[in-house]
Amino acid sequence: MPLKRLMNGGYEYELFRYAQPGERIVLRSRYADIYQRNGRTGPIVFVVIEDSYESAAGERLLRSINTMILR
Image (cartoon, rainbow, N blue to C red; front, top):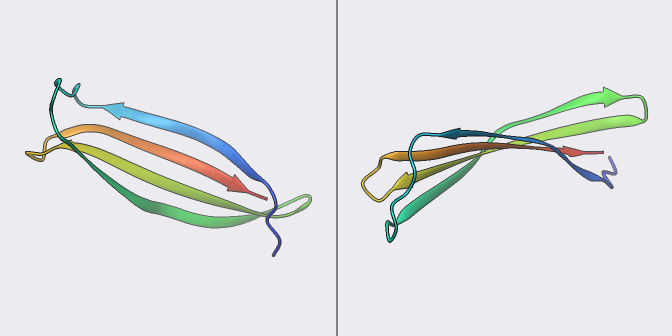
């Protein structure tokens, strides 16, 4: 399955609180979902990546979801 194009499918953000100057931040990324659909010109693969930003104490700061589309 040749996938030659990578497109941005959008971003979503959920802000819990702002980080303080000098505060250490921990980032965790994971593949939240990968699925395929058939389009008019062939298969389309959707890759959803979720990033979670936390303080060093474990408090949630920001959650972002990035959807990439591969054709």
